[in-house]
Length: 125
Image (tube, rainbow, N blue to C red):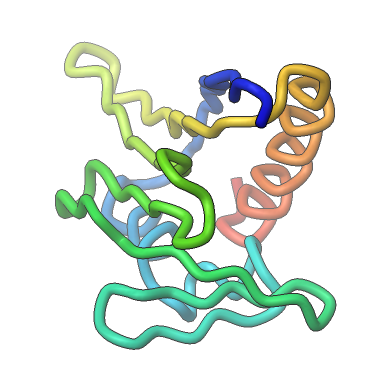
């Protein structure tokens, strides 16, 4: 098995942390931009893309600030959304943390850029 590389991407988002958090932590919000469909049973989220399913457990949840999903079928692999609000300017940023194989880092970053562009479009920012 190859070693996973941690990726940290930051995106300025022009909306309130509360509105953004709903799109990052709920099945309906994630279905709008992240996956074709999302089903939830307790803390387990099943993400569906083009008929393929992948399951993750929501392991961290801090209202309007942080949500982490650990992939069920991949040990020590997760993706995380952090919302940061600058106290001085009020600017809101979304920080995405993910892991990829070393040779797929750029592809993974490009996928997140595309996904976050969809999220911004849905949020109107």
